[in-house]
Amino acid sequence: MSAPAGRVGVVLVSHSAEVAASVADLARKLAAGGAAADVAPAGGTPDGGTGTSSALITEAVRAVDSGAGVAVLADLGSAVLTVKALLEDGELPEGTRLLDAPFVEGAVAAVVTASAGADLDAVAAAAREAYDYRKV
Image (tube, rainbow, N blue to C red; front, side, top):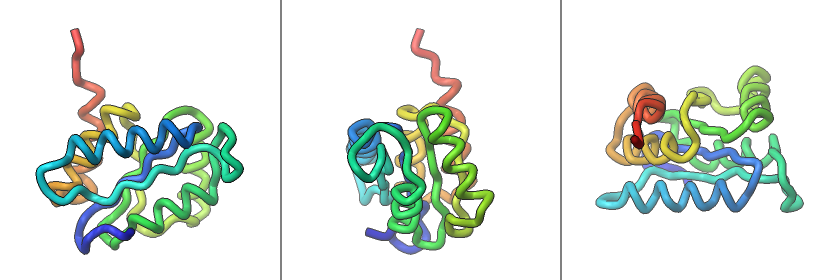
């Protein structure tokens, strides 16, 4: 399940496995028109509960890491803290970056941009720009 060489992978970390999987599915569908970048959900706990799991996050990042970088988006507080701790402890591959972006809109922007072959900086910028999307 690793991304094609040179393509940034995307990991979606949520307290809910269903939310992470649904947002990943939505982002893949909206990136259609070509081969979508690899996207891995990392939601909930290993026993199916609500929460976050260092093991699931690490496994997801490794699954989409092709060497071009991995963009990680997280939904709420402890999901963000878990990813930060993994990064600080060197538990995630080099080139893994936690993005500051809204979860759904940022995920779609990240996957669409990564699918176009953009580098990690461009993927991060696209996800961050999702904060500026006005709905009204």
